[in-house]
Image (tube, rainbow, N blue to C red):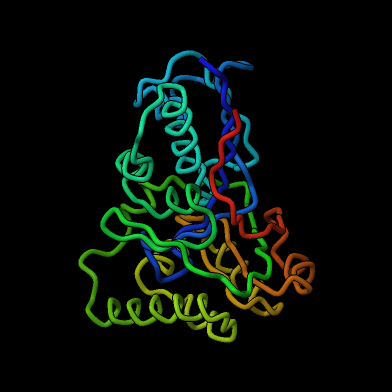
Length: 265
């Protein structure tokens, strides 16, 4: 069996109001390889996904994506493992469907698979045109957040006025992205369904969002379930935004990854 090497981008989910429905691929990457290098542990999400589709032999994983920080580590790993198994076994697989079943939600996996900014619903994904890209400034603290625990504290049921608020903001977000109307992004990334609850115990993350906006970012949001924060800004403002983020975390300035997952034989 020929060895394959698969590069998969990290992702930032939700972008504020698009809870489980919007994702953005980021210029941080995870690489899985078959037939070479040491094998990652069997408990690794990439290896579990690889075995799920019948992948055989070792699977090497090298990554610059920190786990449990809200940057789509598990989604990227599962997409990589599934693609590796599909290539090795010669399978025609619905990678997004399989990854969604393993993840429990599609936004991170879809962004990592397709690249760019994606919207997802009912197992379907569409990539949005992004005429103005700017740069993404990430604030990554040393603390971790596990998605299952973070979801457990969210309010249920949701109040109608909060649902209406988020529907409007998500629609505005799609319009702002596809038309390049960056002046709308600050309003469009507001949220009432998950961010405030999650930020109650992540005060440094809230401070990072506020600092990024005060420094001139178009928008800033809690990345996935956090604790990392993503800020979208003009390329020329990225250094200023990064310099004003709280010292409790490190920062990375990245581009939106427009390629998505790709395979090399």
